[in-house]
Image 1: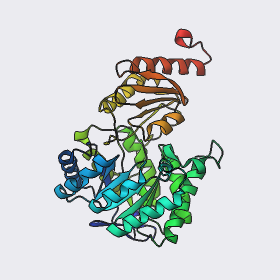
Image 2 (image 1 turned 60 degrees about the vertical axis):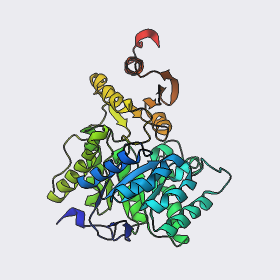
Image 3 (image 1 turned 30 degrees about the vertical axis):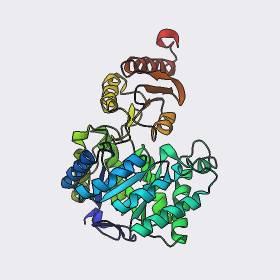
Image 4 (image 1 turned 135 degrees about the vertical axis):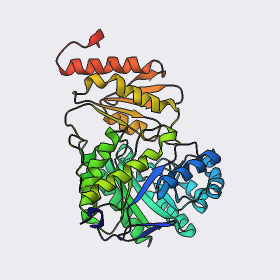
Length: 388
């Protein structure tokens, strides 16, 4: 039997011309990497992703200028559009007339109007979404968990605060009578993605789930990580829409859709994930998907260069994070052994969450290699090169 048909009996959530949940075909998503304020380029990429098979195309909106471009984007593309709200939840009122879905991150709601309860902010989002017929995604991400939730759990428990955050928001949405929503629980570790979504689905099997591995990285490793998580969950009937988040240049964004289609085809055909997709104890490079929030397009090239120059350490149990913007940068680099958080003109380097310094794009690679060599030496009980 087709494993993708053995689905949890979730509610249906219409998003433009597609419906997620309630046994409808699994919807593949992607995200524009063009600057949102460039309406022409963004609409063109949304159309290209739609032609490649994206049922929903996400666009990031960082401010009023981005929001102001959405009307023109809407006029130039027939793609089902989801807008990704960042710190300013109130921007929802400007974008909702032109999109089919609003995604908000519970961990970002505290950035503005910090004395206002998060419940009031969600009520505002619900009112806006209801007025304009938009669906909503509650997007919980490991790199930006609600700080109030995180404080309630031990430092080693990443699942507890994410799960509680998602469930609390679902309960409030239900109390407000708003049911046109789905949830995502994403981590850069595929095994945590599996556990998170299993536990959520066991408590709320009625809610459609958006599946993906955040900051999966570059192909082919990023595809393999995602395949492991999606294969396990979809085989159990968990999941209604998917995203393969890859670090790619703009002209290759369609590869996210291609990868998603292959994953679903393999699952339908009964082909298991590739052997060794999650080689334990080896070097793990995580990097965020290229999107409009990237502050320097050199980020994509830098991520590829990091992969090349660290290949000699492939057998080392070390995690290196390469992040392209302020949204994912702080959290993900804090959790890595070595973290690179890319700004417009320099790259912030961290060692186990502690700042090392800010380096130019020309300086960062040799400094990263020095840090990596020193880390390997320390773990072997040797004196690090250069004595630090």
